[in-house]
Length: 135
Image (cartoon, rainbow, N blue to C red; front, side, top):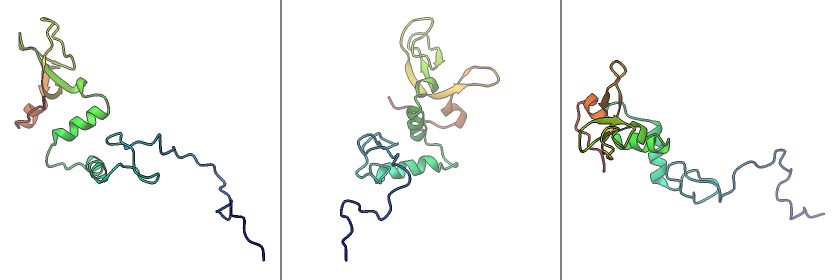
């Protein structure tokens, strides 16, 4: 009786070549860390839980931390941040420097433009809550 070849562990070879990225190039989609094994997607249970919470948002409450993280991941955080000039008090959306004074403004919070009058509106004003913007 002949022994099977030890170099070929599979009975039949793969029909399709492997296209998965190597372990060195794979990163966690939440924190850009390295997953512990080649089969895992996330680097740990905390990132896995955060990804689940981002995929399944609760409609009853608004969590500005999650909104901030998502905008940061999409590189849109500065564009959706309301900045206020310390000198003249003008609020601008997405522009850190005041166009009149030339000074850098401080972050007031997340916001956007009103679709009707095109003025800057804070998310906290829309929700009538006191949402503190982290510095």
